[in-house]
Image (cartoon, rainbow, N blue to C red):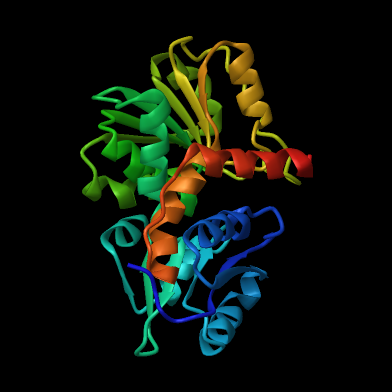
Amino acid sequence: MKLTGKGRIAGIIGWPVTHSLSPLLHGYWLEELGIDGAMVPLAAQASDFAKVIQGVRLAGFTGVNVTVPHKESAFAIAHRHDTAAGMARAANLLVFDADGTISARNTDAGGLAASLREKAGALAGKTAVLLGTGGAARGAVLALEKLGAGTIHILGRNEVRASALAGAMAPHVRAALKPGALESWTEVAGGAALLVNATSAGMKGQPPLGLDLSPLPATAAVCDIVYNPLETVLLKDAVARGHVTIDGLGMLMHQAVPSFEAFFGTRPQVTDGLRAALVKVLRERG
């Protein structure tokens, strides 16, 4: 059911935020569905996050999507949260409620699970290797749980953070969580059915991950949640080795569905046309 009100405005907040496709993605749906609204990019450093959120809430925004590095701060600033955000201790969606409070949600896990299922299917007790220890990694643990992973190796540059993430998430999942340092990659890669990069390494403007994929079985799938560039160095290496690859665009599109519905009152569909439109923009940006 469409909103009858006009001029609904939402935002996407991050640092940097110029890379974000969210304004174009939501704009595609707004035009397709004939809804009067807009999504505005909001560049905010960590020190300014709370002030920007307060400002746009008072300005009448319906809410904001949240990207790196603010997902954990978004969870902390909210008055209430959904189950996924509570388990991840991170939120990628803040909804400004009529009573002046803020609701935090995490749609990343559902979006990533839907994207992985499309290309790689269910894990059904298999082993996954997850790179990263931040808010995106927390959501990825939940996504891998949804797909039925039996074991999830959580590797980070900081092993202490990897251990903390595993300890925090263990009560919420059935999968065995095994933290370790990134240097442990060669030891755990041989048993993996799926590799997921949930770090910002490889994102436009950031150095590549620099991971040697030779220890990974040929049958394993490789996912990078980065979507700008669409084909990261990690995915290029995976394609060259014949792996099934999953880029970050699928996750972006699927996680945006509940956000759009929260902002504008209509549930949109993820289509080939939407993906083609976003791919075209990414290629134009180079």
